[in-house]
Image (tube, rainbow, N blue to C red):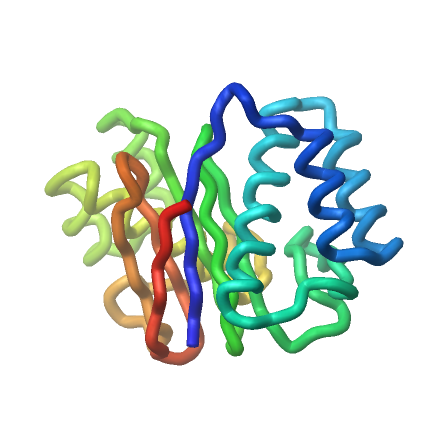
Length: 204
């Protein structure tokens, strides 16, 4: 079973309070260090986005009946967060004031995109990263572009590989992986997993 949640944060969001809540939830020194590293970032928006996504992760774990206390958060060489002491797989994403997260029993990736994009940018990115079938699909409208873009991002996160490599080898139409795209308010969200599973989607 795969569980997904999406949400927003507003001006009343407190990074310090949320960090303290997360530390009390995970309740181990290794994860405390992980959260402190987030708090040490210079960009306050990135701090909020990362902490909100982790807050969503705790919510999902509880929804799935997984005990979060004692789970150790670490990052891979490519900066992908993972649990060092659990078989639960997860992925996080954020864009502006939106976040998305997913947990699953199999490798999984998720991406959310809220930003508006110009036709010139679409053409530039499509020419560089998309194959001919994908380029024909995205030329029709912006929503199609965001579907392919977020799917490729989710694929890259699932496999924990670089963007350049992931975008080159991911075929939106010919992949054996399971892609699911949907909209959360004004955002486009894409999910990629190795196996087709039932997906439960929640809005926070």
